[in-house]
Length: 377
Ligand code: CA
Image 1 (cartoon, protein in one colour):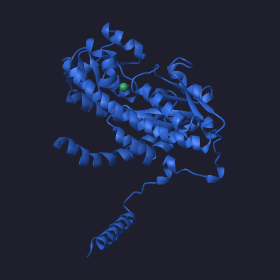
Image 2 (cartoon, protein in one colour; image 1 turned 120 degrees about the vertical axis):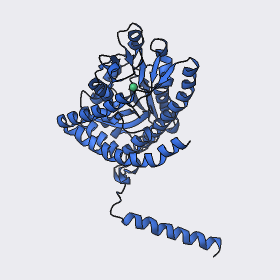
Image 3 (cartoon, helix red, strand yellow; image 1 turned 180 degrees about the vertical axis):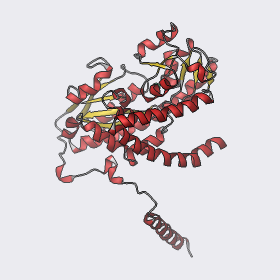
Image 4 (cartoon, helix red, strand yellow; image 1 turned 90 degrees about the vertical axis):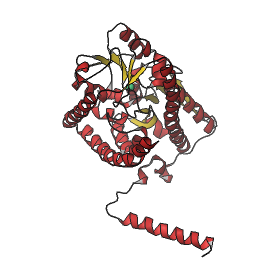
């Protein structure tokens, strides 16, 4: 058999194997029509008018030039302008320059702005299910949550539920795994968590509350002084890169690895009517550029975190792990929080069921591949 014949035979054989696998009734198929790039109704396309400039007003929950989270949105805006040849411009409004940081959801829903960049768990007061789109404690890594969003039905559920608010979300970055936070005193056992005042939002806060912690929400600008004065005993923030810049190590020297936000998603959300009014080409540019924003931010967090960790070590910051009894109690508490919220809210129950299906399969694959590799490396 010459090389050419071998390649032809091998291709046919692998094709037959692939077909065999597809016919296996136990295998769950991925529905690629759900991927954003697949949607297409050519008869309804409105094409771009290159002589007309379209402006999108986009407000963020971050200050101007906020590292990684803000700067990547600035790069996204520049990218959109470049790819569209200047026919689509994203005009950025950092926090409080047009609307307050946590008013962006309502401002976009009503059409005051066309888009916003923020985090889905800030809107859990509107619907507790929205917190699930940020991720859950002990849940998905950034890679796993992206996989659920694009190929496991997550983005469809998110869009269906945001549509009720006239909103259309995209993934807008991921912090990667976050650190457990900064503590003024070391945590030696679960007993040390009792009565602790800690700044921690989202489902993580609800889990910590069941461990006896008193979770508080503080604006970013107040966390350092509250920690310094002992108004709070601990705070979580993001990870080494952004935590370094906040200076928490100066007032709370015990820094813990975490499990409360293992891969938090940030959102780039559009007013649904405003997005639908855009030309086919401009919609496609936003889809592609938001995908770049999502991956670039994830990788930049990683690149900045590895450098900042070295800086923290050089400053002799104690980097610790939470005691096993705290972690075990956290898992029990998470189960209770999920059960309570599922009983209260049908949307939460439905989204969590979708997450849990993908998560259980992800765990098996990630343990088989990544956990083995990380242990071996
Ligand atoms: Ca956080």
